[in-house]
Image (cartoon, rainbow, N blue to C red; front, side, top):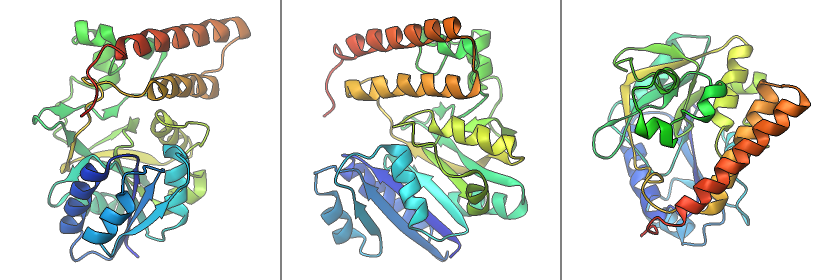
Length: 287
């Protein structure tokens, strides 16, 4: 099997159907399989997929197992040489899959190939980034300071926003919204760290792969549209809390410090989570 597509879905039925249609069209002629892991959506996802895409397998979990655990579940249940991890709110543009496969096939030490990702309005989504350092706490993708001062040097460095994103380039890490991984590399370093319920597992995985001698490569000729809307609409408070718990786990794992500094950093991160939960409550609900 050349390609396995693993999509983890949670209450994303309509977006998932659009995603699967784009994958089906772009994978035509490729030896491929597609597997959906549904994390207890209870919205008819399984029946909808079976009705529209009978060749797609669906595993329906009885609980929300989280992103990392569900991805690992999908990897274990597939057999392709290359594994595409794809969010259900992504639409693959024509030629993207072959471009990503071509990168891995031509570069034997490349573990992950990732596409150029666009927002629905056509703007670039900065999904290729440098590893987060201490300043990423204040100047990350969604932070207030990045929104207020988008040209500050810390945000520009972290998001690589000074680069035009028009050339193939090895990068530190890429978003787990869409990444094509080499199974050989997965077998060497292991799957996603399941201590992350969701968020930060992608940067952790890329870091571990780099430490093992593999590369992560951005491929701009492969294009994907990502319909993420978390910056404008209300999300579950659990999503915010888990994002920050993931930040704590990442920094404990990769940037260990003394007990006092670690405790202070943990407190600051969770305080930030509290502020974001309060601000999120004021946003309009998702439709």
